[in-house]
Length: 158
Image (cartoon, rainbow, N blue to C red; front, side, top):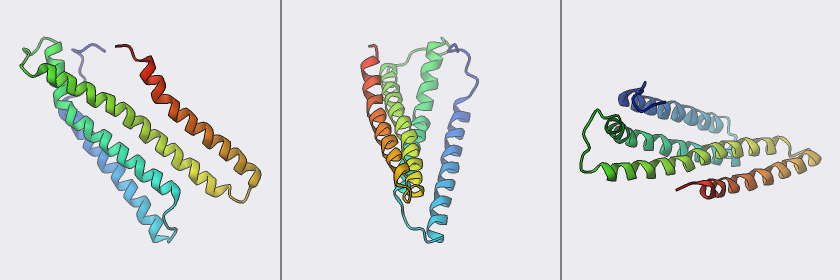
């Protein structure tokens, strides 16, 4: 997509960010209210759900913060606005936010994955043969998760 083809306005993107924060917060709170209402107590998978919600919350807030700057820089790139004195500072700010958001997205996704994995572990507790498979999948998941940042860092071209 070319820079001149912005189909979404900055206001609409910010509204979407706030809406997604509200939806995820509602469902996360509903999950914990139901969990404690049914007296199930706090489980390991709940910690990963909470962690993934926190990662997503920071990710969404970062996008809300960077959106006005991103659209201002895009306007200059498209030639619709003149450069301003803090343009270079804003571009560096965008790079930092997008770098951080990449890691936050991976962390949120893998937190959800680990939450589901620990939920399955509770379901497999009485089945020792299947629990060995769970441990294999868990170790594989951790190894792959730890290798992702290294792959991203070493494959980046400067």
